[in-house]
Image 1: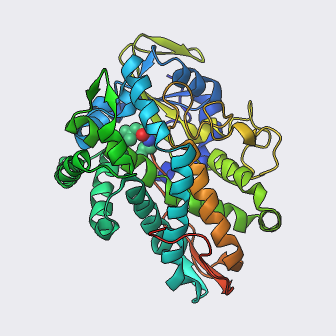
Image 2: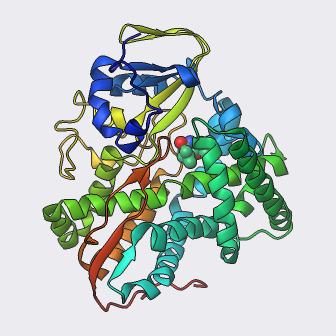
Amino acid sequence: MPMAHPGFSVLSDAFEADPYRHFARLREQAPVHHEPAIDSYFLSRHQDVRRVLTDHRAFTTETLQARAEPVMRGPVLAQMTGAEHTAKRKIVVQGLTGEALREQMHTVRARAAELLAPLLAHGRMDLVADFGKPFAVQVTMDVLGLDVKDWRQVAAWHSGVAEFITGLTLTPERRRHCLECAEQLEAYLVPVIEERRREPGPDLISRLCAAEFDSTALSVRDVTALIINVLAAATEPADKTLALLFKHLIDHPEQLTQVRRDPALLPAAIAETLRLTPPVQLVPRRAEEAAVFAGTTVPAGATVFCMIGAANRDPAVFADPDTFALHRADLGTARSFTAAAQHLAFGTGLHSCVGAAFARAEIETVAAMLLPRLDQVRHRPGSRYRETGLYTRGPVSLPLDFTPVRTPLLADATLDG
Ligand code: 2IO
């Protein structure tokens, strides 16, 4: 088995502290890294990751039965295949694109305005704790049609669910805690589902309740799982992406100036953020048959982790891959929020992210609100930048100082309008 260097482990503290430092060596010397403690294979080359995500028959999402289903309380979209997958994916996509998406962006603006109002005058905020985290949870709850006054409780349950999905080495105690969170979240959701069946609204839960597959309404269990799926998938990466976008722009003042002058550059800046520092770093699959990658055989039945962060910095695909450059010729911004993207932050193939268009619109909308109001934005002096997470990864905090600018926050949206 090729090794990056003797004793190297993706489970080590050194790797967690800065995985990016290790990716070149992994791609070059151990493109199929086996991790004995969890008997899993880690793929780091763009070409191998793309192959796994594209060949959904050879590399299945069977891994999610153990990793996601227990906390999702039923099957998630990514576990489905064939006609059922096509039909249910379409239901969710329709709820997160087109007219629905346009409506949702009014709510995004209103939520952002409400959260920012008390923060902007101070000239300082932690973009993660003060804004990003509550914003991510509240927007997702708005989309689903859940009562935002419960957001702290829902955020706590969400943390447990996300920890279960993304934990590589969970203790039995943590597992129990996560499962308890999921059970309580399910108990909270079931009465809402029953109510929306009787009295549908414009929200995503009502859409799921009204939808049919094979001329039959989805069961409460299926709707619950899809709700928790959306809750986790929309919440977990959102605050990370927003904070990473601002970190990169602050660290590259000339690009920040360009984006301020021309907000039409925001999609490129977001796409480049997703390439350089994808909030979802790992995507698991099961190899149904033995498969050979770069001369190394992965046995049938093996768990394979696609290392998105490593693939996205593969010099075979991206020139000067460790540099943040929103004008890079190989970014392909127009395709960056589709399954045809060059970067793999939204995966690719059959199960590529259903929320990509929503994510782009959400981050673009809120970044466009923040930029003009955070004049001379800079890292708080003395703050030490730190990221955490192996599966999903983002800044622990992002304390910013700025010069307050008095601009009305909301011209075009209110929470009831
Ligand atoms: C929820 C890691 C939060 C998804 C997952 C079990 C399935 C799928 C993902 C993303 C983000 C999560 N996987 N979203 O990687 O729906």
